[in-house]
Each structure stands twice: as C-alpha cells, then as structure tokens.
Length: 69
Image 1 (cartoon, one colour):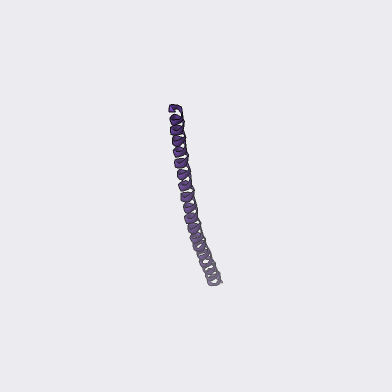
Image 2 (cartoon, one colour):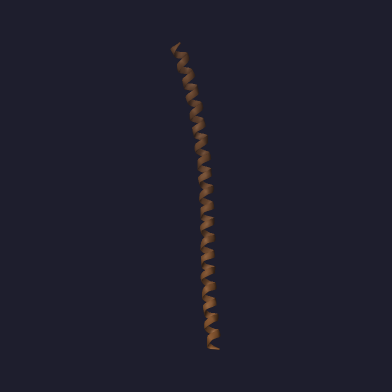
C-alpha cells in the first residue's frame, strides 16, 4: 500500500510540473505573439512615415529644379 501512495504522489508531482511548464510555455507564446503584432504595427507606421517623407522630398526636388532653371 505504501508503495502505491509513493507512486501516486510522484505521479501527481510530475503532472503538476508538466502542467506548470505547459502554462508557462503558453504564456510565453502569447507574449511573443503580442510583441510580434505590436512590432508589425510599428513597422507599418514607420513605412507610412517613410513614404510621406519620400513624397515630400520629391516635391522639394521638383521645386528646386524649377527654381534653378
């Protein structure tokens, strides 16, 4: 009987450890996914800013060329 209790206790401890590891891994994946989403949004915003600066530079270049003629 005592042997069965020890085995049961060991199985419970192993199950608890596996459950905790699984929960930790799940949270890490969720955090990584959230960070990736935020990074993607920031990249999109930066791309828009770069496009706006590019258009502004093109306009300035045209004005400068016509002013030099």
